[in-house]
Image (cartoon, rainbow, N blue to C red; front, side, top):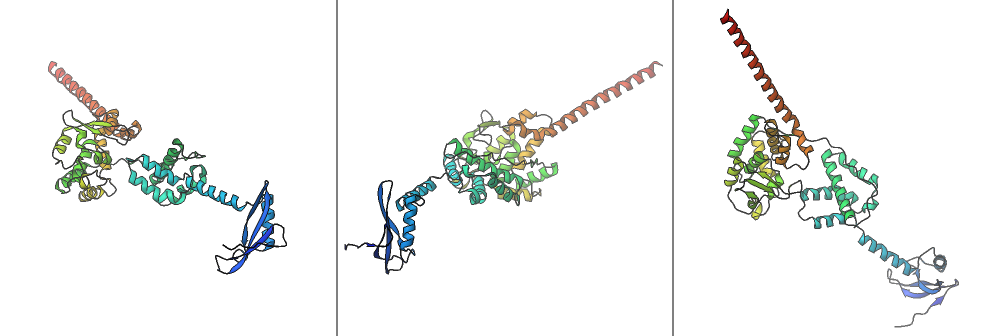
Length: 387
């Protein structure tokens, strides 16, 4: 390899060699600078004559800046860039925390819905930020953006998911804690659905005529037991204790496994279902079902029920409403039947229970009044006979 001759310039510590530009392929001067820093001699490239528009004067200014420490040497710059890349790769962004959260929670309830919320709302604006970098303004912007065309419940669910991801990262010590608390917007959209006797009668007749193998049975099971959709999707034959008369609910919404009584209509319904899988209501290839909204909505529409009536969850409300308004089920028992973790959720049916109590009180009052009237009539008849 031929020796490249160094050529001095009029500027101290600046020299050049003749080389070929990688950009133009032409011969040009390549300037270098030489200086001492921290007792060490440093010699490095300053730039090319054409490619970098470098001159001896500019190379000399670079040399002066690097001697003062106002500019990093090439080696220091490369090391800084390497550290920056490593920092970026090690950066625990909200997107990375979400991926790890899913890895450690493979059986996450509502995973598909949460994935959609993350991909559509959180990732585009906050996905590349670390929790410690978040500002209240970032969350406010997300909330305001969602509020333009989303329901209050959806806004709350998205923010709750964001807070859950950050909390996961903090607990696992994967990231710096957020510097502020993400406040949840107040939502007053609790909806207690009910059906009139005529609507319920129409629904039962429609279910009887429907040919779908599972939709009608799932609607009946909800009406008989108040079970949630996800609980029915996860229900396996091994979870049904026909002998003792209980259904075991595995991993329900409340978290802790529960069991509910197996009443006679439910027993007959389950006995009528053909076992084709370990699941009572299997999906494709006998695996766990994940959706049935189209089939149950078709039954709802054929029965003439309101379009906003939720075909399965609405029947859970119907079940609870019938129990509460019967006057024969107290709220604590109803809470246990609905597997509510907190009595606050069951309180929405308290007014129905109160109405049943009022009817009972009115009945008692009427009975007493009838008794008094009968007694008064008897006294009058007795007095008439004695005269």
